[in-house]
Length: 110
Image (tube, rainbow, N blue to C red):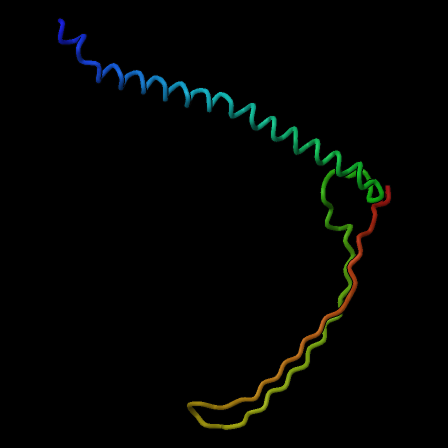
C-alpha cells in the first residue's frame, strides 16, 4: 500500500485531464453567449448606419436595386494576317475597348 501513495504520475495525469475537460466544457458553454454578443453588436451597428444615412431611407440592409448604372462600351478590333504559313501563321492583332458611364445611388421612395 505505501507504493501507491509514492507514485504521483497517474494522479498528475488525471488532474491535467480533468482541468482540460473543464476548460473545454466552459468554452462550449460560452459559445452561445459569445454568438449572441456578436449578433447584438452587429445589429446595433446596422441600426446606427441606417439612422446615419437617413436620406437613403430607413432600410437596414443593402438593396442592390437602388443602384442605377448606365455604361456605354465601344470595341474596335483589327486583325491582319501577315504570313499564311501553314504551321506558324503570323498575325497583327489590335483591339481597343473603351467604357464610360454613370453610376448613381437612388434613394428609395417610401
